[in-house]
Length: 127
Image (cartoon, rainbow, N blue to C red):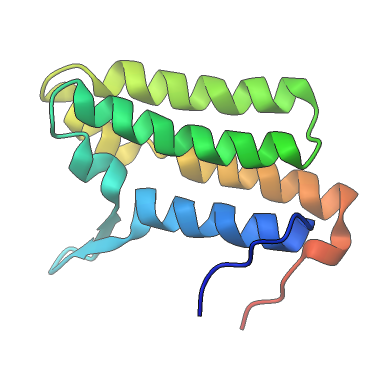
């Protein structure tokens, strides 16, 4: 089963959720049960890793823009990714920061809030 390719809000949300999961919560550290994703892992590669994860975060912003979200929300999302990338580029401290600051999770929340208000049919009841 793959991700939906449609342009409807529910399909876009599923793709954004999948990218957020991959970047922020795809793996678990045993014993402490702390989730992390490719953002923290790839971010360990100096400079290039942060640029790669910034590009992956930009995909979420691109999908949000295609939903017709207001520019100020898109800019806020871009600010989250830019802040994460800038601080994440600092050796060692940035890697620790990437482990705790989840820009893509923040951006997913912005998208969900927008969709719940403007496209309630895109809501999926989990359970």
